[in-house]
Image 1 (cartoon, rainbow over the protein chains, first blue to last red):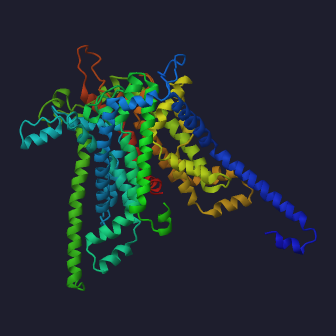
Image 2: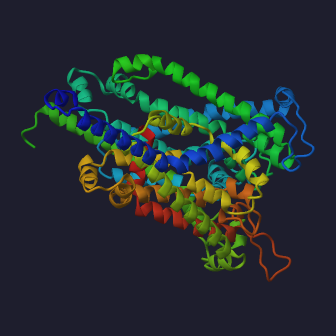
Image 3: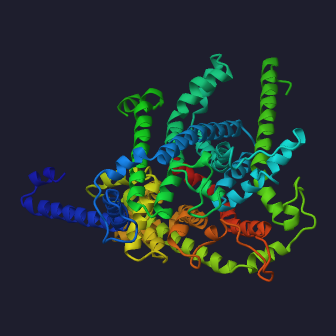
Length: 327
Length: 290
């Protein structure tokens, strides 16, 4: 920069140092500005993120009951070993895995299918997109009321409709069939969000690619399997991770459906892991144990995320091949 | 039309059939999605005696408009609505401003450590909410901030990773010339942000505000954990059927009035969504796709 300048001028050092100082102080003020701007988040991240988490980790090794600090005793890893002997926790974890295995694929397929259909040059696309997105805006408390009316075993709409074909049907949707019912509610509420993101991904696929494949004589199915799906894998990958994280920590739907109080106990079919955790904390005041349960769930979520990330290199197509190799 | 070859004509006919098929699926899906909403609205106009009848009748007969009057008067509805509004407004206003600031810094300012800090923001998008909610509750309880609205204020001030990301994406797209001209005039980063970027960010501001507002308005978990029955929000109040006739000591719990209350409670987020739906969906897409 200033080096060519210094050769031609006698008092080269002066402007050079001045220039250097100027850029240097400018860089410092810029850095200060950057940190001043992000300080709300940074301070919040430390005070409401790191500190509670550190406290939470420490408390998970104690018998903390949420109120009394004087009686807190260090239990070492006892809370953690207790989880593996807690048959309710293991049962709840199995139910959560089953629920995730049901909910995530159905949600992905439904929202992807809706996006594909809307991408067929539909004229009223905006109308349908808005309509399908609407359930995700409705507060979960109201959603649960709407579905209670449909699923009620005594005077619910669903049983009334089935009774037209099979009189006297009284299926216990909210207890015996709670898992499929919950999946229906969850997909109903979440499909619109998934669809909007898939639709944006589909519109990002260059038209020429699909058209070129058609001209080469590929059938629609082949174009879909070999052009559309591979190009959509980054979006599917992202949605899959979000879906797994969300499903494993499902809590409010079963509890709201079971009565809507923090201590409401859902039926066995939807007694999920976080429900069990919240029970331990708020019903039995076992904060230390509840936090241990929570941390183990966090570890499981991290493991799932890492598995999806690690396997992504085999099925996620990145346009820049070199980058895809590295991921 | 006559210029089309037989093959083209066949293809366009196939396309029309395919589109017709697509429309059928779309209308059926739309109907299925709408059924729960329509049904809850219809039921909110039914008399309690009609609501419990089986098989259920589709249309309310007679229309009981009084359900809506009772929904507003039999409990201090407006008190809870105010609590919801207050929390949602305070939180959203704070978090929109701070998220915009942080997003601006990540989009437009330079400093050592910026890349790493942004990495933290992105990885925080992935952290499950359930991990922080209990440790934070333990902390706030120790500070005697439970049953106050301070947690929402503090959450608001500390911005949210999702919205930081939204604003960063938005501000990255603003042309550099705007800022250069202001810099020549001697404006510092704070003035550039406040006088140039913020006023030009209306779509992002509206999206962020509405998403936050709808989020707090609909949130049931945080208020039920933190707040007692007086300070709580509509979400907690309406999670259980709490209506019974105050003039009649033998009155049962009346579901249809709770349904009417739930319908009223749903109106603000839905109206907000319709006001800004295009921006909202674009916002969801930018943060969803990266």
